[in-house]
Image (cartoon, rainbow, N blue to C red; front, side, top):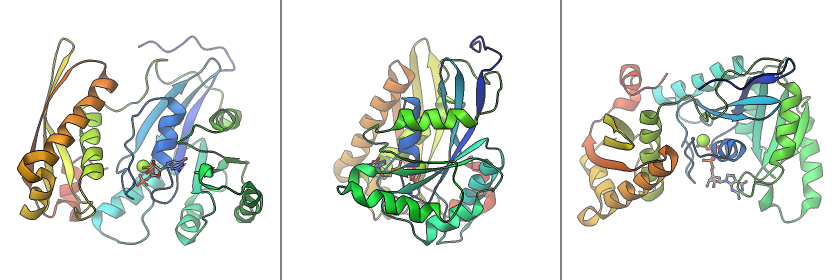
Length: 300
Ligand SMILES: Nc1nc2c(ncn2[C@@H]2O[C@H](COP(=O)(O)OP(=O)(O)OP(=O)(O)O)[C@@H](O)[C@H]2O)c(=O)[nH]1
Ligand SMILES: [Mg+2]
C-alpha cells in the first residue's frame, strides 16, 4: 500500500483515546474511522490491547490509538499490564482524547485525568450525550469538568449516533503535527487479521455468555490459513475452570454455535471474503495472574 501523495502541509499524528472502563472509547474510535477494528460490549474491560485505527483524509491522516479502560479496582497482573498500556500510549501521543460519559465525572475519571501529561493538547470528549434528555444540564457539567484542567477543546458527542464526530475530527486536526502519512490511504489498522480474528471471537464471548463468566477468559488463534479469498481460522477459547467451559458451550452446544456464527459473519465483513471458522473451548487456569502467561497470550 503506497502512502497518498502528501502536500507540504499534510498533517499526521497519534491520537490517544483514554478514559475509565466502559465510557465508549472503542465505539468512538470505530465511529471515527468508519470500520469496526476494536471490539465493544456493555461489560467493562472489553479492550485489552492497544489498537490502532486509521482514517486518511485529503489534508491529514489520523492515527487513533484505543486503549483499555484504566483499572482502579483490582491490582492483579492483567490489570497492571492493561494500565501500563494506557500510560505507554500517553507518552507517544500528539493529541489526547480524554473520554467521559455525559453527566458522570467521578474518582475513576479523575484518576485517568491525573495521568495525562500537561504539555500535550488534550480534548475533553463528553460521550453518550444522547442519553441526556435535558440539554441545559450539559453546559454546567462541562464547566465543572473543565475546572479540573486546561482542555484545548470540549466536544460533546454520541459515538453511537455519530453525533458531532466531524466537529471532533476538525478539532483534532488542528493539533496534529505537519508530517507525511505513516500508513497507506486504505489502511484501517496496523493489527493483523489473525489478531482481529481473536478479538472478534472474544467480543462474542463477552456479549453472549452471561456475567457469571469471569473476564479472565481469552482467545488464541491456533492456525490462520489463507487460500485465495478464503480464510481458515482455528481458534481456542481459554477459560479458567470446567464450569466456565460448560457456560461457553451452552445447552447442546447452542452458545458456542451462536458465538461461532456471529464471529464468522463479522470476520467475513471485515476481511471481505468467506471464512471457515472452528472454535474449541479449553481449560487453562491462572494465565491472567502471571506475567509469563500474559506475554504468551500477546499482552505487552
Ligand atoms: N447510549 C450510548 N451508548 C454508547 C455510546 N458509545 C458507546 N456506548 C455503549 O457503551 C458501552 C461500552 O462501549 P465500549 O466502546 O466498549 O466502551 P470502552 O470505553 O471501550 O470500554 P473498555 O474497553 O471496557 O474500557 C457499549 O454498550 C456501547 O454500545 C453512545 O454514544 N451512546
Ligand atoms: Mg474498549
